[in-house]
Image (tube, rainbow, N blue to C red; front, side, top):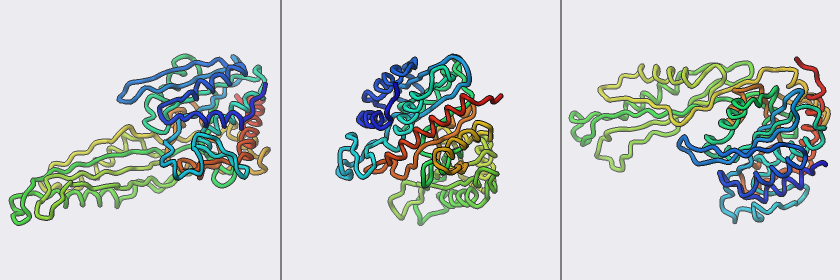
Length: 384
């Protein structure tokens, strides 16, 4: 049997799977996969300071080349329903477009891949899916633990696709072969609180904070690499919690974020930040630095015959060869990249996370064709 991507996408959208609530979406997906010969395993991960998350792993085939598709079924909250033309969880078709929360990000990618897999003979090779219901929020008990479980249980792969929106203007015009990392931190400067009329009895932390802001902002991290732009640090806030004008504050905190390329790691960035802080005269204040949250590592998949094969498949369907990009924020591909080569290939996504999120139905059909064409070429290729 073959699966219709539009029908599947509409049913997926009808599940209000706002992170981490599955609302039946993984059960629905599992039934569809079992109907086309996949063995489905449901996995719940929890702990590490985050909520429990349900995940799905599915596999079909035991030999040949191994292709992994990774994605997520969770969606961001719809926000104010009044901003939507209709119920965000009731799929609506209008003007050749399908509206609903999750249509672009990224239930469309999941539906297209499953529909494409239904066209591929089971004996062609090994197809695997790693689907989480926690990409949009903490991302602690989702893909990272899912791909680790795969590795621990012998489910390796030769190449992976993530179905996040990757196209810029038209379907297939861009695929992502890597992503920048994200590194956040906080610097606290503690002085001595006092009356502004008696500054000699206080120690104002703000001049030191200002100097640290300058030290972090004025020196370039790098000038970029072949596939990445220059890394960039932005100070996002400076807070002292002082509502009055006659008190010298006792402490202040600045926070920053770095989007960085593959020159850096979180460890080397932390060392760079400490060195910049140390270059500032603390003027008797106590200065401390800490990393905020868990940094996202940069990754770059090496250009390979499989990326060429994907590009050939896109060109065969769309008539245009894709541009290779590393732009945008972070995605779960960063977790997959720790175990093998991965590329993001999906729809155009300007409406994702917005009210009246939607996709063009023609693009959904085209993406399904791209995935199917790629799988036929991937499993028919004789790469080492």
